Length: 452
Image (tube, rainbow, N blue to C red; front, side, top):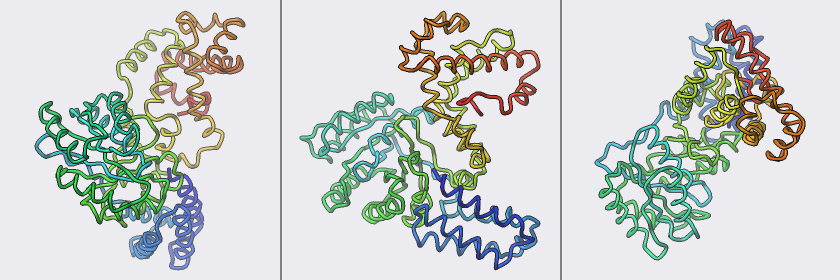
């Protein structure tokens, strides 16, 4: 997300590096480029105008005029204004009501509402230790109820059954009673979507809202629709007392216009960003961190939080002890490391949070190939336990069998074994010279797909 905007803003601000100070003239030229970058990112025109006007006024202030580095000064102003534009601080879910806290999910068909219900259930269960129940009031879309049941089972949330013959308000009323009986902390209510906003849909969801009186009413919207996402959210906001917005499919949106437009157009905070289909791919929206990502400063805080939440500490400690004892780094260990990276959203997701990711060489970016990581795991899974423990025994016929079992080529198996051998050497050196020295020695030597 924000790739194109980050690249364009980076080039624009870099053009100021040779200037002695910020002046009305060079600010005007730079802001013209910033305006084009925002419009190309599909940010709504009123938002672009307000943003550039605000940056111009702040950039011409006395404190910036005295800066020795005009480029850095403007980056600071742009960063601060992006934060203001997107809401200044994270707006967390309010679950302070008497259980069950009811969260009503609204949105158009195809926005990813049902998947978001599963992601939110997973988030509340894993991060906040809440007991979650979900229910579907979508009696129109074929298999909608069954889909939510499957998602709930995967997320480990309780599922309240409903039927297409029932009325949505009746379903909601029964779900609240069931949540109370089962002592659920949170009840997530999935509602019907339409292909466009219509009166029947609005009337139904208003009726549901009046019945449930939810503490949170979240509008789920596809970020790939750009400023249309903000406009649709505004229409819903006029019909319902929305408390926040969830932007979905952010992994497919390189522009990021919706994230920059939603707050100003709707007046409602973005609460979460969703990406991909995995149920753990939901992150709280922090305007300051997102602004840093846009300006290629990275998002180390989110990265650390993700590591804390998703890395298997038992496996990490086991591997550390193994290194200390000087034991071999085998293919079981390599698979564990690859799976940990996958849990955190893959290499591309991790790299996006690294400071200066936009300036990384294309060769390094191509090395961070999540598909290649999946291939590596498939190859290791096709081996016998003995082969994973002792890779040296993998010769001609064994390699052919492993390649066939993983649906890949012998060359792919050879490449994996070569990468493992390189990592194994690094781990041996680590046990002798200490981790800090080893990390310095690894710079630029990690194999493709493992280049932190």
